[in-house]
Length: 81
Image 1 (spheres, helix red, strand yellow):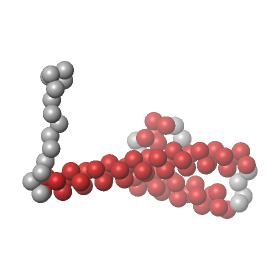
Image 2 (cartoon, rainbow, N blue to C red):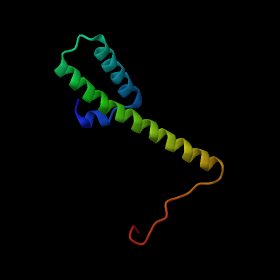
Image 3 (cartoon, rainbow, N blue to C red):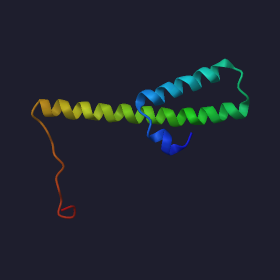
């Protein structure tokens, strides 16, 4: 799986593909070369899942702060203006 297509996956799609890879690897019927390729692909999918979860966590924290009336906006510096 290409890095570009992996990065565009939703959390649910990445998790589904990761679960299929784990099932395939656990079957024990996978040649070593394919096993290594599946492991590498699984690591990429795991990173996608972790990123999606972290993004969701940050969004939730942001929403909680806004609800509590504590919303911080990015301060524009002179260089950015």
